[in-house]
Length: 364
Length: 201
Image (cartoon, rainbow over all chains, first blue to last red; front, top):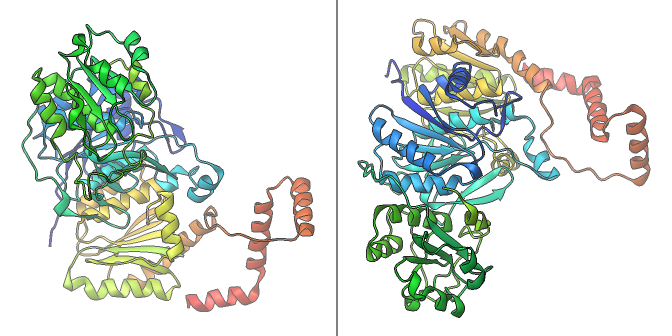
């Protein structure tokens, strides 16, 4: 029998995510490294699961967080990958999936578990509130401490990849979607959970990525022009887009035909021909005739966008950009069953129910 | 009284004692969910399980207290103790008198570990007494437990009018008024109290 338990070393990368309350105190006061250290020191529950070292990177809303913070976090992880048994990243719910995917692509693989979690303030309707007794965070373990404990324990499930862990479930970072049901705010997109802690450790090892060495390629191109063609006309887009500054176009296509005729005409303009133009489509139909644009499908919108930002930061080779966007880099593509005429998945499943118009004004 | 009993170590030498611990808890009238070695048993109704799952709560949340055999270290023990600390759950952490889990004891001596977590050594002779003397703490916890079970009750208009009037007069929510009424009835019901006592014995 074991006579002692090896103490695991964790690094807690703080990028916000303390929106909720613990022990009745709002945690918005975690705004610098000394405050974070003090909070860890007075939280004995965290030390039950290992030695935890907090590192402050960002405090505030996810919607206002520069994505460059993820580059800093990825660089830190790459530099200290051997020093810890696992990394837990707390992050606001806003842009959580996008940033987790961006970090996944920048790291390009990992030999250690890297777990994103969040502790959002949830606005529940009366029925949900009655069901969950959410007002009592200390009992429910729903606060930041609860999510941290669970995230640290989840590293014992056995995965060695970037995951989102929230309310007992581990979700592959490149397969996550927002999905609101009660206090569950994240779900997995056509892929099993990597594991759960509902009643003791449980995980489906055969689904895990094999542990890999880091292929650290940091950086991303932020000068991406984004339009959802379901809501916007090409003329409107043209007036707000700076063609000289833009390094790539990311368009959300129409429901069944990828791009409408006016948009197909728009992307063929000579001044845009030098640019990679990705057309995200939630349909499972393929549209090979979009050139010079190319279709991206069978993955979630947020992951697709993160991958586009990342690959544009790595190369200007249009062919390579297209190959990467249409390829399965880190388990983000789902297998497609049935004929090409299959209706595809619902907007909610594909992450399209999220309003991505906020990305129009994003400052990265 | 829902108790989570955790004895993750697969130690044949301890097996009989672990079984005895579970039997002591069950004889005391507890509804025991357990993980013993690799065996798991969740003694919650399908409705309670569904509620926990849907609401995002852990299956440990409906437990009123934890009893842990912690002679041998295990990651599940540390996790359960972390949950017990954060949720302020009454927890009895047991170890064989001759084999104290030193690392765990150091962790439990940290500042801010709540008093509801008790660490006790046991021998064959003291085991039953150690466990039974801890159970009143769990019962005290269940008394202050917040109501989480949803119950739909159809009432007549006449009763509703009375509840509205009473609630307004005594400045109390109708649900609280009914809960208090039922609690008083339960406590004053000699037959039921006798039944509870017999079950405990």
